[in-house]
Length: 397
Image 1 (cartoon, helix red, strand yellow):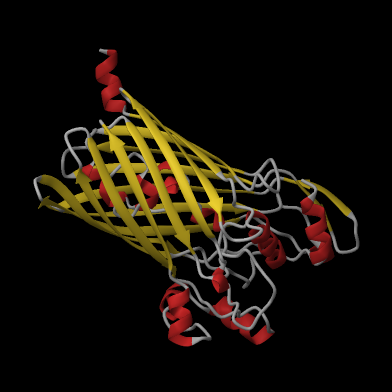
Image 2 (cartoon, helix red, strand yellow):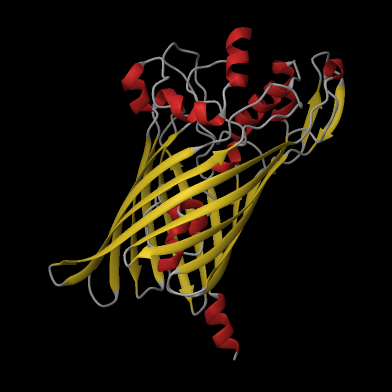
């Protein structure tokens, strides 16, 4: 990857914090497609930004929505509380995303997820994601070649969902997070960098209400997911630490049957990162304050710490809308729009997607078309292959 040495040489200092910053630049996935430094620009700093990538094709094809859409195999990422409403009793899915193909060729995200329904009221689900940054040729600020490193991030989680009332469910998830940015290579000046480890939890809720619209049996839904509530992460075994991407997501969905074979859904999500806004890294005193801040303090301060006040707090809310058309529950066409404020990352793009279901298998794909200039996320593809394990078992019999 020719881009890597150039960026590292520009950065020069190979401290852990600058490696983490490099990672954000390379993946361009968390929040920041950085433009020129301006007083209004206060991008949110997070560690392990790969946790924010939409890992599967269905939600990605609808503009990255999923908090309140109908339940599917990959609900673990968007809202695990939906699993008790899914029709099949068991399923699994594998998704693959070639990432930043306009820049490099060896960054990708792999995602494996599955669930099992004990009955109509309880379900257990789990997922594993692996994000690889490929090969990075590393230099210190004297220009000495460190050789190659293969940074990667991994997260594994398990969730339990429970139907509390006929139309309402809740779920909790526990997550293990592992981030290895430089394969343990020694830093300039003898500083040792270690893989970062953190734990997190999700709290999710889902409300689905059947309603009559004209002569059709429609469904209206609300979704809530507070994800990655957990510890901060450190890479140098010192007081230096960073926040993982704690995220509050709200969504709504309206599904309407056009006729016996056709249905359409309109969906919308909005989310906000519950981490500090102010750049505490600019001075030593602020850096100490940032490092001493607990995860809970960071979550609470995220509602009022924006330098621009309430107006800037509203700018931190990212929203997306999407639609899905289904024919005979076999053919699917999707479209969506994703919007992030210009001072908070400026990710703005349209998405398109399609899916095909045959017996117990379903194949989905999505595509990103950016409308922001020089956005490396443009032309991003995702693929998902899902299996109805319960149906497969009956098919084999």
